[in-house]
Length: 567
Ligand code: UD2
Ligand code: MN
Image (tube, rainbow, N blue to C red; front, side):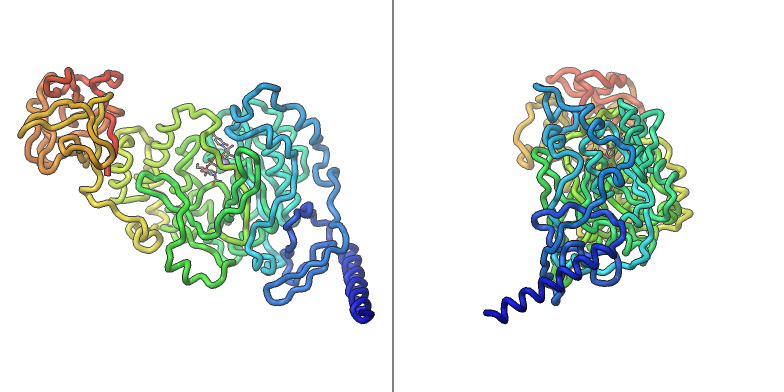
């Protein structure tokens, strides 16, 4: 009994001496407040690193932590300089009775209640805590664009960076205020040490805003973040390490989920990577099973076909060499595909690093307006990505997103030239080597109905056409209402839609398909279907008589044919 007590006293004495020694020795690095489960941490130095106030004994993978003292923290004055956090946050609060979701599409009341900083759970695999990183990692410029972001979420993003990153790694934090209604946010936040804010003179969207930020960055490595994030313990070191070792790697963290309702910080699965479907809709998907089986070390990077887009680290000269972003993309969307295709096809790689974790508030709707409309903007941006990078595979994009056909997307000459200059590989290579799991649809597989209100275009008899009440759901549609839209043909089995003469008022009928026959060539024009040669549009006139071609009038209900894909 006495031996045990003597041993305990000896251990505690050693712990106390080491703790005090470390406390005196440690540099001025800011530290996070300890969270309840935050039991392990390791610095970015090569040697085993002890969190101040803890004595850590490392045995294999297990870390035993004895808490000795409270970790020292930078006081708010050092951290925030001349920035008055209290008045910044209290100047804009929710008024009683206001809908807390209205302005930001997340619960503002909960965000405000949390204040500027809070402890979050260290969500990494425990082995991450014993990873070693080079002592001479490059410093980075952190770029955060925002448009009307809530003050509490934006400040929490910035403060989480300042408190959870070794200060030597932060060259600067560049905010780009994308013409938010209130210019004060930008001005006030610039008072925080290391923070600079550039305000756009007009709404540019996140793509051009990021390019502006990147152009003004002084560090050799760029780090992009959304304006409603919270970075977690040692989030940056793994990413800087991978980029330092190979500047062509573009790396992102596992993106944890901050609940849009109660702001709980939730660990995301570590078995996911970025994927998409042919309509260029981003999705998280399971790592393919063979890759999962081959992963013996959960700290290893995960190769990903695409990145989510908002949070990543990239070498600045590599970013510039590869052509930054397509700055003709507007507001939001599609830039993550364009960047991902470009990185893979032009000699780089994309990775998700499980030992890096950053929380993000995922929302269900956009809280801001799109000057050209949400759908048109997404189509413009993804069309540009498809037209420049997807070669013959772009047909599947148009099949999956027929409404994209005929929509304006501007000139892509510069980007096509860039692709040629960089000598990038074909999309086929990307499909075969990077994303073989993405199945190419069988031609016959994509069919759709052409809906006009409650009526659907249907074939009647051997050659006839007309409108009928839309029948069946999903794949259960009657054959007469199934159409395949494969430009320029509108097809049903081996019969195609054809005009009978090139003049307005001419009837439309069905005849054997021939893609060279000018009378059978159609293309979408907005929600209408335009005959390519006559320039006239398919018009139902009356539900009882067969359709005809008439002068295109986009608003006319009898010319609107909504394609709805059926399996
Ligand atoms: C995801 C990405 C986002 C971007 C987007 C596709 C993550 C975590 N987020 O959508 O970064 O790649 O997919 O484009 O991967 N913003 C502006 N100007 C605008 C619109 C938005 O500065 O006109 C800012 C906005 O305040 C935010 C960032 O851009 O900080 C991303 O916008 P988001 O949060 O609405 O996008 P998100 O997370 O839905
Ligand atoms: Mn976001």
